Image (cartoon, rainbow, N blue to C red; front, side, top):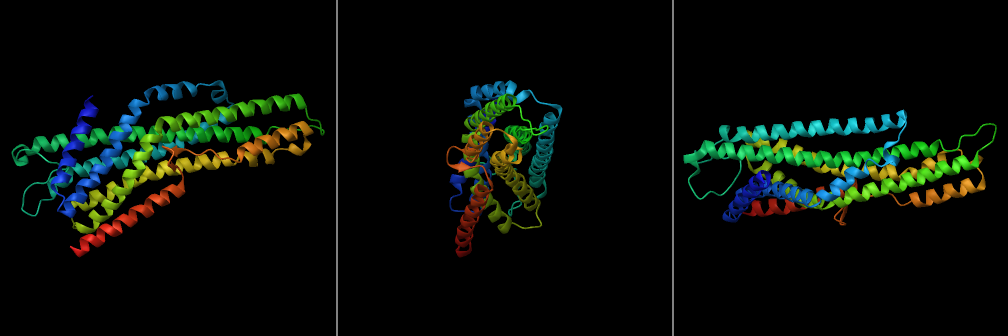
Length: 347
């Protein structure tokens, strides 16, 4: 309730400020810059709570024997992928901390043109903020810190779940490559067919895992992508219209890097997951299938035909999480930025 209250109050005050500044393009863009981030965060938090049963089901599904019974070599594959996402998560955390620090410092170092003190966030207040400046400053910094912490938690959890799906595909590919082992041109058909059956069950369970991840997170990611277009556009505009010697300029650059990294990681890990699933057919081909019986070869053909359709994570059935979507977001952001800059130049 504390998180919800502080997030919604912050969003409503910034939206009210935006309405009062419709005639001032610079201040309006500054407010929309933070609003886009806050709307995405509130929607992701709301989706996470609405989908809490799916999250519990997902956590339980990760304990399936087909996903947990692994050899030492396969366990190392999982650890390798998890270590990678932890490093990325740590970098993302550091960027979030730096952004919060800059949000706290820039109002103390920069002043408004009329000499009055700035606030970390452009919000509407029904009273004179100068009378309670330090209290408001502390409250805003606290709300930014709380939002950054929870937002990064949801993002890193999403990256980790996608990475676990990729690791399972890598384990499955490793098993398929080593499926047919020959000794003096002799292949135990029953043993190979039983292993293939286990691989098919594993493949189906991975697909069910990805479906659960998509059901749990896709709506929040969809809002994140939509708001990212506004965020990138407004940040670029703000960087051009404010003084590069101000602390706010440094804040905007850091903020841009942090939230762009947030979107890039969703698309990057989704793209890796898709590529990993596409390689299942190649893994079947790389085994010694030619030494198997006709029944074994037919089974390989069936698996390869099924693997032709790669696994893709979707954001609310509108966007795929891949690099093509990332480029579409960047192109859209630039288009809106160009229109906004043209309007500002004419004014």
